[in-house]
Image (cartoon, rainbow, N blue to C red):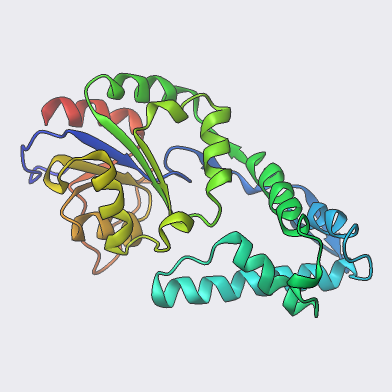
Length: 256
């Protein structure tokens, strides 16, 4: 914990979602073998769903196009901080396969999105003690989720499945805002929804470059969930709080 953190009372706590509130465990994704190579991916289930609409697409071609669509989305995200929403990414996937999305039945992309959500969510784990922490914090603070993710329904599904969605005053996902952390717009959107000023808000996340830097640039203080006790990257702005587990937030908020 930083000794320099200002003693301004916190009225709200905003959380990153993946690898902060919930953990993504890739080993829980379905196993898939393509051209002798084993991988963990939702691609096999997506390809099976696709067969109803484009049976001519081979698995290897689909896996290659899916990977390309992700890389292209990441290129745009990293250079502009603009979110490429999942429906948009699936359209680029189809075009990569030589299929014009407008020629598909209207349920094709929603079916693939639902399949992806189902399989991806199975790889998401919610640590048991996080529920008790959120319930305790909710008694005295407004709570929010601010997530870089391309499909709001998946984020909401995970929180609803774990029975904690109602603990948050707002759930802000980048596909709905159009911008990703560290862009100020997504933080401002959440603060406005909470009705809390940045000076009275704490942001908690696992990424120094996205969560800490973005929150601080927006006027918030930041807690870095640094589970492995890593050294702060060179040139990175130090968070006000460096914690190993979310349970440490209780002490930080009491002090605030």
